[in-house]
Length: 284
Image 1 (tube, rainbow, N blue to C red):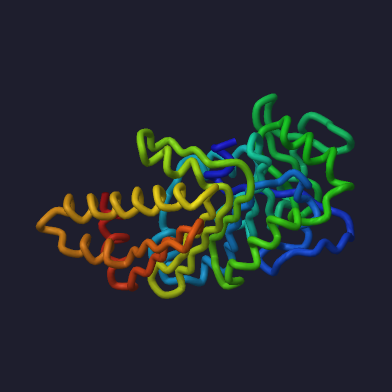
Image 2: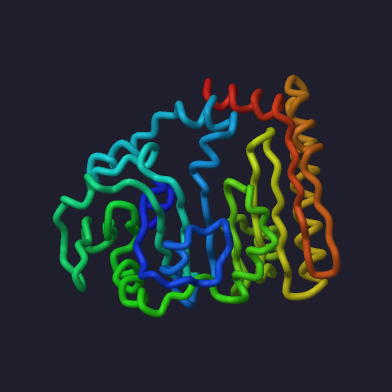
């Protein structure tokens, strides 16, 4: 599943239903969101491609897995995709999307309820028409097909979270479910484990600007998360190389605040700083 998430490849079609959703989610994709979804992450690729960061750096990156995926499916994610939407119930996830997939539809695969799953028993891609498809674990794709007729858009609680995300964000995510445990280990992982919901979004039109906001189980958990994040930022400042003063400016652009059970991270990095680090990254 991770392979398909990184590649950013695919999607699935729905009927002419009109789910209550948000401008950030393509209406066709919204009709495919399972009722048990707790995590949604989207990339508005057409909007992202208009940003200076994408045009100057990201569009030039050569990524072998993308080339392999294009060869296998007939779909080039860098050219054929317009919108991406990853959905997960906390155990399994599927990447949905919109694009131009006419060349991929001629590929033969394993038939399942009238659709062709191209891949193997672990991961696959399924094309439904010239503009919609899906990719992910084969079992998750079959479950998605099974639930198509009952899909009515994001679950209400998740849709409410999405309203906090500005529509101009090129990259965004919303989560609502059980506590999240990330692979940081130690006290940091323990602190982040108290998060039960949150949103994340980025705008790359002028530098890098974004917000990450999370709601914790209780106020003590929020205090722990706030403290852990501020500790990480403080350690980063202390360990910043003396010959790279711009690193301090990066940390200056990150602010952590808390209001009772909610912790918020604000990120605001100016274009010149983003350009310097993008140049360094491309050279490496």
